[in-house]
Amino acid sequence: MSLRDNPGCADGFAHLKPLLRECGLLIETSVAAASVSAFSAGPAVDVAVDALRRDGLFLLAGPDHCDFCRRAYRYATEKEHGDAKAD
Ligand SMILES: [Zn+2]
Image (cartoon, rainbow, N blue to C red; front, side):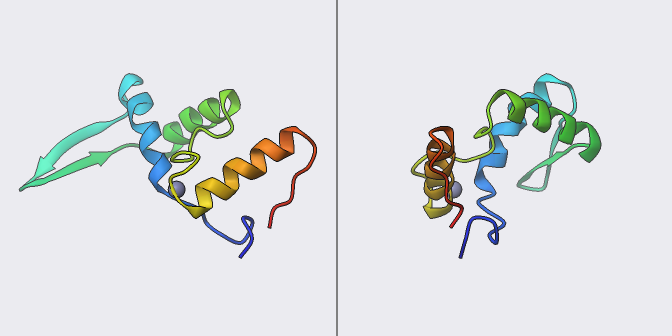
């Protein structure tokens, strides 16, 4: 499966949480024993886009987190050197 056909790894979205908190966009509470976070999608997308403009790898969990992240990091690194393949 190519990177283009794969929705990717969602674990990196945790990187967005501190930015949303810092911008006052994050509502955090608990329901019974569960921690619950909520935010408005529109403003959160704006925060994410700004972060991605600064660092295109911002929403990846880490270079060795999982097969998808490893392949995406490798793709981005090779792309910077003009040798990209999205397979
Ligand atoms: Zn991952």
